[in-house]
Length: 237
Image 1 (cartoon, one colour):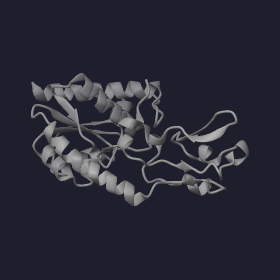
Image 2: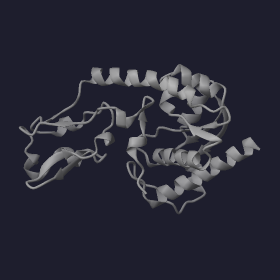
Image 3: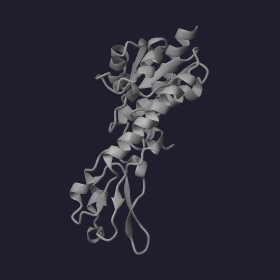
Image 4: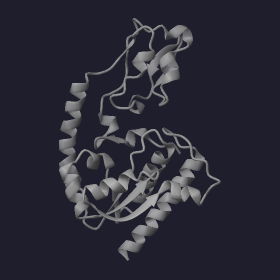
């Protein structure tokens, strides 16, 4: 099973709706003598070499971290560029405004809110997000999820939502970013589950992967989801 990066969000907006990825100038790109430095440098699988004759392509644009341009620094021929940051920011703001209305309209008062941590670049963060998706799939009538980024940027409507709805935090590590942001936003935090706590009870698992979790990571996500489901069942009885 592959965990889809396109399901991730940035500032409360689906990553797949944000047009941020490298643009390749084929007049300058020479594949670094068939040893492309950008492909070796980027840990997110954005680039690939395809075709005959081979050429560099942006294989997974949604894997690119929004507003990251670090790959440009390693390109010896200055063949990489990016969209205008100001234009992308304006689009994100527009989509966030549209999302505010959607958050309220889709809320069913009978559902608890499961909020996973962001944990970008960490396997335990990806485990928390996959676990949240599994919980919502398993309990669609009693659980829903909300992007933590909405709280970190102070989204007013999201704040109202969590202040009147029971929330469960799934955190990847002891930093407890999800739980702390729920509390700071005056949300109704009724339960917490920490991925590292579940991992301590299952020391044989070695979760790895950020874009794609390995089998141990997926198994850990299932165990975390099981703990969250148990807490939901306790609260709704």
